Amino acid sequence: MKWLVWVLKILVAAFVILYAGDYLSLRYQFPHHRETLGTVEVNVYYAVKLKGKKTEFMRADSQEETCTYSLLPQMGYLPCWYVTSHRTKWVDIGEVLPRYDILATYVAACVFPVARPPRFLTSCPNRSGQGVAGQHDVSHLSGRTARSRSSV
Image (cartoon, rainbow, N blue to C red):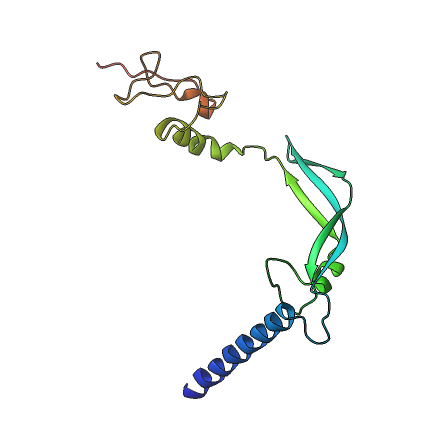
């Protein structure tokens, strides 16, 4: 068990030394005042989510992505060797609200109101537990008809 901890410490120290050396070589541009930042042309595709679990794919204009000439990600940029091997960038747009998230949306819109409730909510209960129209009706959320209980 002691040797495992010892090996782990050596590996962590080696990674810290590698990262620090990579950063210093990038920051101070050695060897020989090399360039630190480069650009790579990346193809951009949009994946637009539609109803019915369908997705439409559209190609956009290619973009220039900034990268660093280093081994590891530095200064908020990915290394150029990684960006050149991953020249395709996918951007997900939109998300269809799944059926099971409707109750979560109701709670977020009515219990913790930040903005106006979504269109499918006809009313939110007020603090006393009564709906805007005088009753707490959430039957439209589940698609079932509301049943009223009458006391016998």
